[in-house]
Image (cartoon, rainbow, N blue to C red; front, side, top):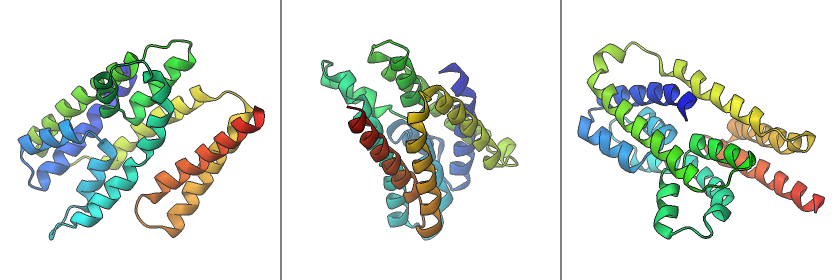
Length: 214
């Protein structure tokens, strides 16, 4: 997880500053990170935050963004077949794109310790909590930074992670279909539906190819 942590710190600081500007206290920021722990969703909520508070819009946007976790958690379900429920639920609570990605890469490397996902997620949880709380304290110093600049850190990580997932030409169709569907969805549907619809398109294509190979 170490190569990912600088990006997590940067985004945590940005979230802390943004939340402080909306009037959230340090305690409220800390609680949101502890119990929600969904960086992209939390930042989207901050972007939508205005008076009067659009609660329905915020809830729906966060819900749609986080629906991708249904697909991610389904892929790790076999890992926890023989694990205690408490360990399973704790691992799923700290499931993120980053922890899922490194855990999948670890499994493909021939290792099979389900605790890897929990350790990766818990590490990110601690760093996200600390950075967001620090962002509230450093609000005046960080206010001049553009959050969009930090997006390149996460984007770069996912590009490298995706390259590590490449197993051959058979992966090309699901990847291209997911990307094309997401880009097309952005043009016709508002909000964050492109995340879910693109992921579903790629997943269905991958499942179809898997059945055909069998």
